[in-house]
Image (cartoon, rainbow, N blue to C red; front, top):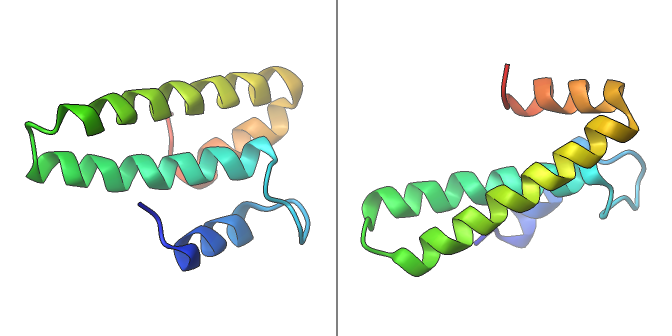
Length: 88
């Protein structure tokens, strides 16, 4: 679970404008941070299957946001991928 301070820091680093909370860029960044934290939890607790299911849902959600961003604005997609260190 991300704290409010961590969420605000992630939003500030990827937001397109001051009040940006729902753009695909911000959503992908937040999901990536949540996925990282949940992956750490699952390394310590390998039998937590309910959290594993939540992790898989977050990965699928992030993938769909990335697919949308790739089709709508390739330049923003490439910049976000590079910034977050995903793929490539």
